[in-house]
Every structure is written in structure tokens, then in C-alpha cells.
Image 1 (cartoon, rainbow, N blue to C red):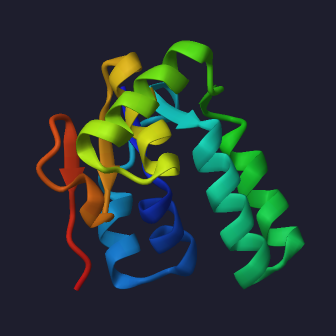
Image 2 (cartoon, rainbow, N blue to C red; image 1 turned 30 degrees about the vertical axis):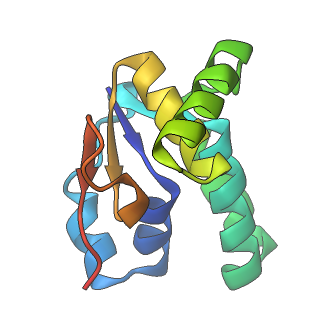
Length: 124
């Protein structure tokens, strides 16, 4: 199982060189976990940068994958991770979801560099 962080989604949606490279690391739909926090961040970014129609299209794609909501156990784990690792709240929720699912996390967000289970691909 793999969680694709918002940063990787955004690079892919933007069509950047990094996004094209990351696409090779995207899991099959049956192994692709999408935290609802990723849906929020990706929808917001896409609506702002590419419009509501594109945001709706991307949201529809996420709904064909395995969507995982923020539950109380994930929220508590995220709070502890945020305190321990100094992760911003949204990143802590995404990482906690990956840990709860025993999934790895594909990201290009430096906040995750060096964390267990994180596959960090640097920008640039």
C-alpha cells in the first residue's frame, strides 16, 4: 500500500518534470491510499491554480482509489507525530494515515525526509 502525498500529486497535476518522474512511482489503484487530507489539499491547490472543473476532475480520480478518512486514532497519532517530529498538522495527518495503514509515503516535501516509511524525492 502506498500513500501519495499532496506534494507529489501537485507536481503531477502541474505536469512538471518531477511530476512526470514521480508518476512512475504511483501505485496501482488497488494499492493507492488517499487520506482525506490529501483530497483537501489537492482540491484546494487545483481549484486555485487550474480552476474548479479541473479540481472536480482530480477529486473524482481520488474517489476511484482507496480513500481513508481522518479517524480519532489517526488524529491522535497525528497530534503525537506533530509534537515529536515538528510536522505541520496536515503533514502529520497524512503521515499518520500512512503509518496506520502500514503504507509507505511517496513525497517531495522535505518535512518527511528521513522519516521511516517515507520515500522522499527532492525537488530540483
